Length: 214
Image (cartoon, rainbow, N blue to C red; front, top):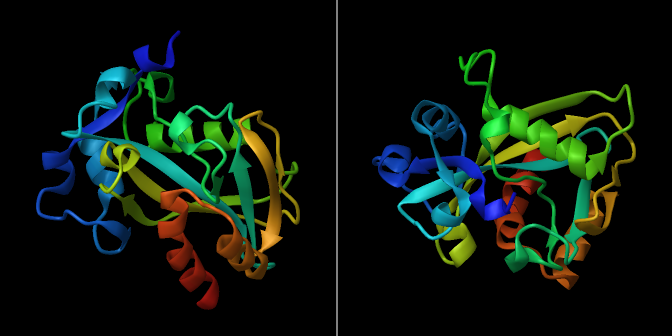
């Protein structure tokens, strides 16, 4: 199926933001957009949603970290990546659209069937290899909204930190040109020398504060 014919999760901006519109990063403690999304989402063909800024497409944007070693998974998107506007850019976030297979309509309680979580784990499993038996602990750090460009105008990032005790993490998807688990100090050096996608730039400071508070 053409990717633009797939039905994906969207939320009308009036229901999403109400009086809580923001630009850049917002910590989860300030507004629980995660719950707002689960209570107000709709399905829409991706081709229509990409052209309709009245709706935001939620994306679970996941940063893989080892908090003990202060390591972060960083990679460069290949020209095979699904979003052409992000080709060749470096990133620290793994994520994708939430589509109908991520939602079980027969068992749709938030407790038992969270399509955001299902999408998150599906994307992680498709794109990277975390050694078996490694602990994996996700939590929402906050949210990313950037209306300054065409990609950001129709997407909202749910910024997850995925904690693991794995010492190495490897890419396994053709959409990743190159990627590796590195120390955060190395990431700061890479940021100064390479072009990163906008969401990664926004996520960098919250990630830095997280490590500083460990």
